[in-house]
Amino acid sequence: MPLVSIDNVHKYYGDNHVLKGIDLRIDAGEVVSIIGRSGSGKSTLLRCINGLETYSEGGIIVDQLEVKDDDRQIRKLSKSVGMVFQHFNLFPHLTVGQNITLAPKLVRKLSTEEAAETAREVLRKVGLQDKFDSYPGELSGGQQQRVAIARSLAMKPKVLLCDEITSALDPELVGEVLRVLETLAADGMTLILVTHEMNFARDIGDRVIFMHQGKVWETGEAKAVFANPQTPELQTFINAVL
Amino acid sequence: MDYTFQFAELLPYTSLIVDGLLWTVALTLITTFLGCLLGTLGAAARAGQHKFLKHAVGIYVELIRNTPFIVQLFFIFFGLPSIGIKLNAWEAGLLAMVINLGAYSTEIIRAGIEATPKGQLEAARTLGLSRVQTFIRVVLPPALQKIYPALTSQCIIVMLGSAVLSQISVQELTFAANFIQSRNFLSFEVYLVVALLYLLLAILMRQLFKAVHYYAFPNLRARK
Image (cartoon, rainbow over all chains, first blue to last red; front, top):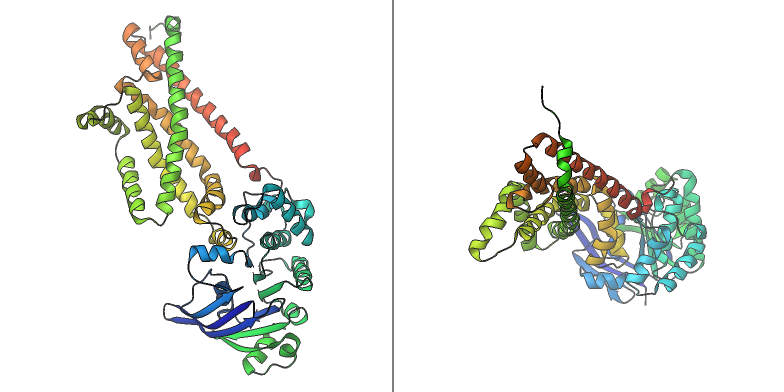
């Protein structure tokens, strides 16, 4: 059974039909990159997977939980689906350690010691074990994004959604964040990324999904999709970004 | 000008002035605490989803912010007994101050809450925090941080406004001044001394608020 099943999902913003019948199956351990122009619906699709956006038709099931617009269901989902955002969204008034332990304590009901232990473990994973007591404002963008990844990991999700997580970073900071993702991929974490990092999508990703006009326009094994695009739209897109 | 200042004439009344000052301080401390608490709850209701609460608090805020404090005070002290609610001067005065600060701080804190970036709420939701947890742990602390100067100014305004309580014979600082002045007619001396005491109190409050700020928001101290 796939970890994420998306069945014929439609979404409208008023009259604007942004997702036009999306079907996708993603298995545990897969690294899937969603690429496409802005406005193609890729971020919207990603945000539907953990309930940040509602959809009008179809169904999404993640880890045997139906994604629906219901507070309790969304809270249950938070234990299976993590998300990292373009602008980090760390809580500025909390230290790195407090940012990471907040949800494990409140939602997973871990004790302070257990949560702190988990926090140290995930910080080690992203190479920031010495920043436990720092505030987000003291860190570089790349470090903040690594903390945001660690914060998601502390909830022990089965799949991590990454929404353009390197787009707000200075070019020299992109590498450190991508290296963390690479480690996670190697550890077998399921990753679904909306990304403009085509090299990363090609070299680390298992599968690429090219979205265009609210549809999955083309999809396939990562290297093959880039080497041998089947549609003129993907051809044009690849030429424009690579 | 042939007036001779007679500050020494005030000395016999020292304990009266000190008592008044202490009452003003006590009223202010209690009001600051309860008023800000009321304001936080009011702001939560104003920013929340519950339609009835939202409108009820809206009416409360507009009612208090658009009527004179002294009228609110008289209504509570002289008006409410007509419908069976009898409060002594202290209770009425304190209640009027708390209700007054509550209304102003509701609006101030609401502004801070509404300035919360959407991404903070999305992060909290993604991490599985409930609405209440999100409000208390994620929304409120940065909101208070943002509006802290406005909120503390309002607390000082309420402290100064407590002088009006002398009108229903609450024996705070201004009441003491009025009393002494009625005995020895040394208006200049008495009101000058009392004005300076209010000034001193306001300065002390500002310093106290600064100290609270320092300890309450350690993230602002962090090195960049």
